Length: 311
Image (cartoon, helix red, strand yellow):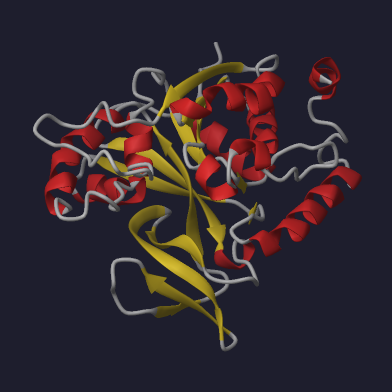
């Protein structure tokens, strides 16, 4: 019997980045969003369920614009990122509008995910090969300590934009296993690729063939209790910055490796990442998708029957 595997799509920040869900720029030739291609690739790779992590206030619009297109093709669940699962004794300022970070986002999916899963960002195009690599890994996982997590890695040259610096996790790897990940702002400067660590460490140069993480991470449900365990520690460390701090899943992953709670296998992909970090990126992403449709990597209309039904 084929093992169930889930794709968790982090979409709680979509409204703020794009000025509201209705204003998301169509990328495909028939109005498809990048998220449509993510679900399509996941289905092709053998994923059996999609969990959308969104803001509760965006539920109706999200379901109408995105959910209705994919629900006929795969099991779908919705989870909401809200601060009702904060550890006892802690309180997030009511004035905070920004989501609390990707580790908190994953924790908000705890009741919906009971099988091996992969998380991705909603507005990133990862490429079919990445999903194929991930599905194969997830279907062969055991679930015993140290827990076997994974990371789909990209060549840095396949992930950067000419329009400015972007956030990337620069990976240190040994024997196909993740040793360290340095969250950085990465971009070209003076003919070189420069990484500026977000933790304040000194900038460093990276080669175009160095490995970076794009938040395409693979877990078993064992990650949930570990996120909960580390949550109070994070809140204590950031008690003076609860308005802006973010509880990030790459940091939690790195801690789990240091604690010998888990290992993280690095799964290299030859795929090219596309995304709209800057509005100037939009035409190049649209052109890339158009070319892939022309080359028949994707059908001209991903959800043709659904589009007809909803017109």
